[in-house]
Length: 572
Image (cartoon, rainbow, N blue to C red; front, side):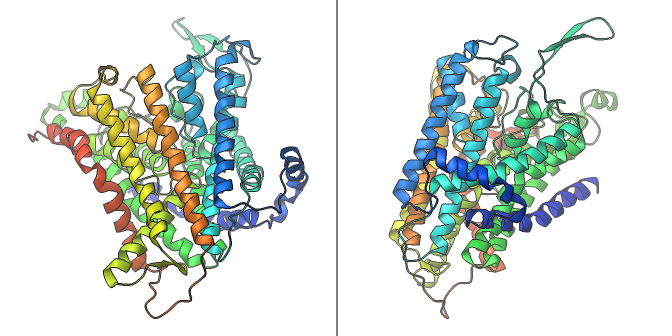
């Protein structure tokens, strides 16, 4: 009952916020700035002048893609340089030196791609200056880029007989200025009210009751925590991430962070409906996402509350000593418990965020399979800001193509005929993740450099490697913490997976947007399939599960499934 109440309260609050958030974002990207944000207009004009942007000028999809690549490249180089030079830069009270070249490369690519995979311990590696001007700034930039690509695809569906899909720089600046900055400011203040720290103090040394000295890291945590959740970036100021009491001190801060992770991805579904002129389309997409998410959530909750059945054979005294009554509490904070830990894990991997308040490596095998499988779907169950929506829209294109094949009609979606070029771009989108994840996982288990980072033998060790490359290629950033990934092999391999998993996905999406925008609109006929109905939502869910997940069934069988069978005493 407690689990149902918490989950229901979270979902109801989210759904109540979707419409106002979506309407606001639709207005911003269409140039209709809401009245309560118009005071930021001078800042927008100044940004346009500094960047040399003409807000009236629009771009074709190729120029839009090149602009996206340029912004990503500049951000990557700047962040790499900050890490390599941080020993000479200010706001470094702990006098941290430069990161190694491979670690700096991995981190720069990670934050550019909205992945925020961290192979280092933040409180013992990064200066305040690097955290603020490097990591936090890149959190804003990468999130705004994802939102811009999603809006470009929406325009592709909304427009007809046009060769342009908007102006990347206008979309980027408006996404940061009117959406990410105000929301992050509000969330940061709320987190500070709950005890999240925000200062520039040197680390403190305190002595406990027995006189043992302990170092307490300080820093500007709340500001980075806010954008990491709002922008579905993930990562953390501290190595323990959102399990650290300075990042996530209370159940209420935990609730705020989960809500922040889903707010923009959920709101963009309504933005889609508003911009294409049929809000029912947005609700159909949102319903599909919510149903898939809820199914995964109940699986995770069930297996984490069931715990390890092997403990049932122990005596009562032994059970009490190794396992908290009621489920698997290993790797979880007592202030959150099993329900909020499983909910947070499902939220953060559904949204491609990567923030964690518990250790996924300590989940039961099937409980750990849930976050891994959600990433492998292609970050479409809410997904990252922008990337979740454009991923689900690609699956919608595939769904209508499948439906067209079944009834012998040319597939249509929102009045646009889906042609061979569109399906080729959609196919690239769904083929890139399994190629990256499975190919690099196979490479890691074959090479000594890959196997050297595995601390746990057998199926669980394989799961750690599979999860790492799933997280990297899916731009999630969470990890099975048993894998020692801060090595030259993993820093380079994961960096490549993150880069290709982001850029190679965006370019086909923008090409699809350009193709759709140039097409004429076809009036609905008697044979037109309605794409706002429960029937279409069911078809879309089936397409996501079958097309997105089946590629990974053999790999999952070698990892979490084998481990679950071994745990229950069944010989695989």
